[in-house]
Image (cartoon, rainbow, N blue to C red):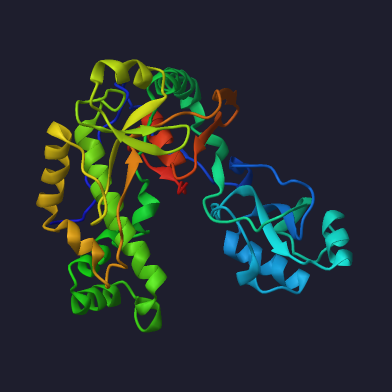
Amino acid sequence: MSTEAQPLPFLTACERAGFGPVGVKQRPEDFIVEEVPLYEPAGTGTHVWFWIEKRNLSTHDAARLLAKALGKRPGDAGFAGLKDTLGVTRQWLTFEHVAPDLERAAAQNALDLGAQLRVLAVTRHGNKLKRNHLRGNRFEILMRAGEARGALLAQARKVLDELGRRGVPNYYGPQRFGRDGRNAELGRLLVAGDEAGYFAEAEKGGLRGPKARDRKLQELFVNALQAELFNRVLARRMPAIDELWEGDLAWLHRNGAVFKVTDLAAERPRCAAFEVSPSGPIFGPKMTFPAGRTEDLERDVLSASGIALEDFGRKEAGRQPGARRPLRVPLLEAPRLAEDPEGVRLAFALPSGSYATVLLREIVGDAPLAGANA
């Protein structure tokens, strides 16, 4: 099986020509991301929560800088998710048992954090913030299009109207597969149990020694393969991602529960109301298959990959159990558009785990999105 990324079909049917390359992230202020918390901190507790703003800085680097200023270890930091390096991003970082004088200094933005990081607010809660304790992310993006901005604005309005009604295709974005797109191939070798092939391929990309043996990195590669196969299933279901099939495993959006569709007439109105959506596979030995033609489609994609379901349970693959993922996601807030002298400003919010570049692609097509990796 080739793990080379394949063209992905669009949900919206419209012309995507005449814009040329649409620039994003040419300046930090062109790309603003703010996390939407799953819950608000209570204001009391032993864990201090820092609402930070970082500019062209990774979440790990921000945690390292704040930890140093607080006399803590970077590994002590709690955060809900990794935010983009390029751009202006805001999120919570947490540390337990912070010295009161340092907590006060942070609240006054008086810590020595450098020019790329500042603390906007400080509060407390009873527990450490953990990964995936996140409802979503709010984006504000300047799409630079020059003289084509009027046409781009009209196109964006049309596309966003349809995405608001039908949902955003829940493809994994290209950054999931690495800068050179090789992550899924490295994952395939691990899932196949071909460690020699994995190390040879990793070395071609400059990855060797302890870095190539890093288990967390290897798991990321296997996850990239799972993402590639999910994208292939979703591509086969397009554009019917807002339609349930008999035997589907439906995703309940309010809590992420999954159930088999046995009464299609009863579930169709719920799908139309965006209460439920069809789901797709994150392949693994403990994953539940749907029934009917949905099962046939998923097994066909898996068979074409040359990989057996139990292969994801290998030690080399990190023993991935498998899961389900919705084929579409809702816009969490009504999107906003405004024409700018240099392009179009777009604001929207997506659930955690979804990609802003997938939404942007529906507007501009496969024309390059300079710097986009959200």
